[in-house]
Length: 123
Image 1 (cartoon, rainbow, N blue to C red):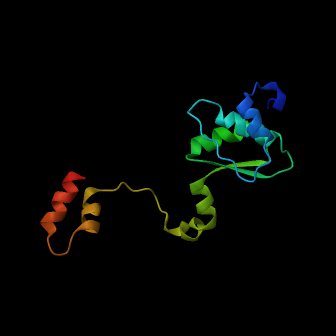
Image 2: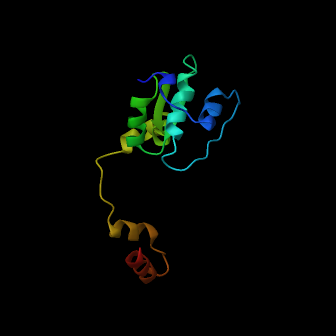
Image 3: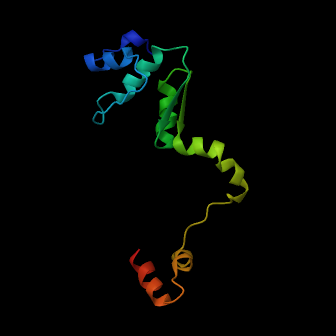
């Protein structure tokens, strides 16, 4: 892992890394260095446990390679599953493909089945 000072941070990134604010909001375009800034932020605080939440598993896995070991890189879904989903693990069988008929049965208005056929056809 690269040393904190081996990276050329911009003035803005340096300000974020040096911040002692209770809450930070970083808003930047894709590819502008948000993750690199967060890595620097984490490296500057080696004694502080941190959580990095990613939208999907591949991003979380890539982040694990970049962040120091005191940062837990996870998805929001994995966090929720650890707390709540494990209670329902027994209901998670083999993945099944969702068929139009299943959607139709679940959404069929009881009074007019033809309405549901139209709905399922347009979905």
